[in-house]
Length: 177
Image 1 (tube, rainbow, N blue to C red):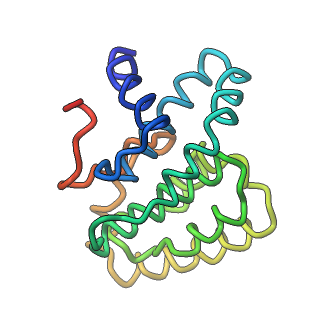
Image 2: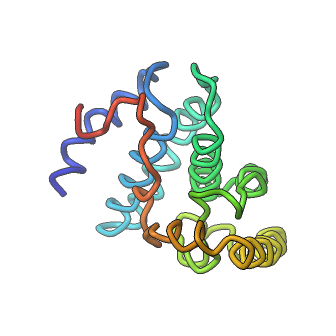
Image 3: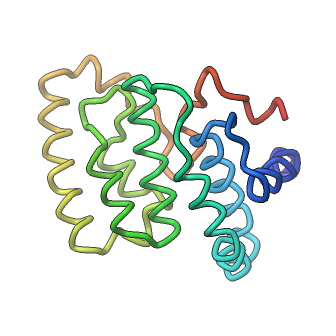
């Protein structure tokens, strides 16, 4: 609760006055965490908050990144964008981002983690998600068999959390607000 209270003014500022220097991934994390915190108290209010700020969120998501992203940062963005678009109930955009997620990436989530990721709940039952998930699961298992040393260390992500995605090193850390 204390962390949410500390981060709320920064999120409010970013929603009304986007900061070109603030990392989009960190912004998504703030939005997701705020939404789920509100949802735990009052799901209807959380949905209203999300709908009220949807255009501002989309504006922020569409801003060009000021830096060239490394491969791991690209994967981080695919993960976060897929979760944000799914939460906004924009399945086509969410699926475009999901299809960019590589099961061979060090940050790749296991199929079990994807199945329990609550940010994907709104698209989980769609035929496109089910088809993608089946293929991702096969690809993930194949890669895991080929490279067990990598996959064993990459499954430290926590399902049901959004903050498991690492904050970019060159971005302002949320706790530094």
